[in-house]
Length: 234
Image 1 (cartoon, rainbow, N blue to C red):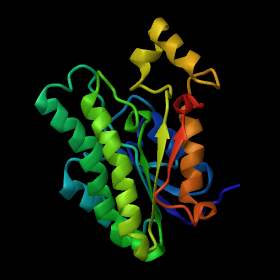
Image 2: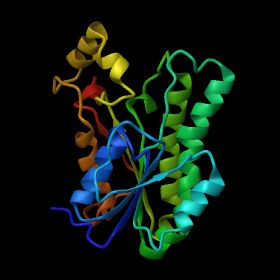
Image 3: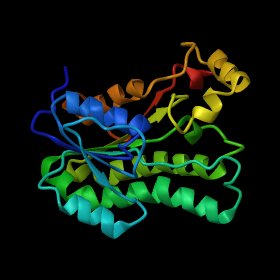
Image 4: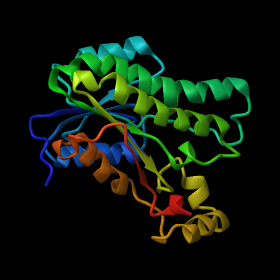
């Protein structure tokens, strides 16, 4: 059992998909959870607090973080994908601004509070951090950048007592992957390559994030853990 009673957790992108599952997992473990993100059709259950946040707006990010009395764990799960449109340079820039620079904005804003309690950051990377994505060059580049950002901040902020790690989800059933999951041919191809033989669930990712945010991972920093049912071992 991992107990986060008395701890405060901020999850960007916490209003849907993997981010929402992470919020729910931390809440069940006793944490005071703030789900920050854009409006979503998915309901975020109480007692999780929800705040609107655009991670491309540094002043909004700073205001949100500064409004917290303390902060123990930050999870950067905010992200967008624009299949086939990312060859347009404006779209390419927007995706990087949300997925990569957005994570950095949150990390920079949260650093003082995390330093005060030797807190933790968990970034959400992707299998496409390591594989090329022919339809999503910006998404793939942003997630590759998340891996290097994670490693760099792990080195830079170790003296502050801040641990920085990442989780690289595989094919997880979320609104972002629904077009692939509902394509029978493509879905069958992905599942057939996955040794565990199924699509992942958001809660499969959430458990690993909880571990990395907890004292059980006190000597882990700069790590990137795949949660992909074995997809990446081929």
